[in-house]
Length: 139
Image (cartoon, rainbow, N blue to C red; front, top):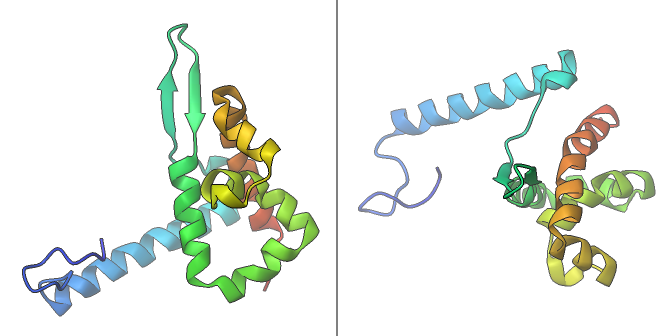
């Protein structure tokens, strides 16, 4: 969305286009915040789903978690207290495991990622982690 798609390397063809996109993104963020505030059980992130041969669906939240971690990295100072707090670090654990730097994980976490059933479990715990994080947000 912000990449250099244009011929001159600029991501937008005009200031008007840039403003429109920024307003749409802000509207989307506002709608998510309102949903989390007013109807948190109605919020559902979009994850990858794979259907097994037996018809069972497995969830993989890796892409979503990578995006979350990249966004948190944009304000690393602001997010540092959350990752350093023992209670919140535990809440963030599935997101960090799926979306963080795998080389920084311990052996147990790497084994979980390699096991598709364990990965499914981690992925399914991400929405609850986000809702718990939302409920403890720092002001």
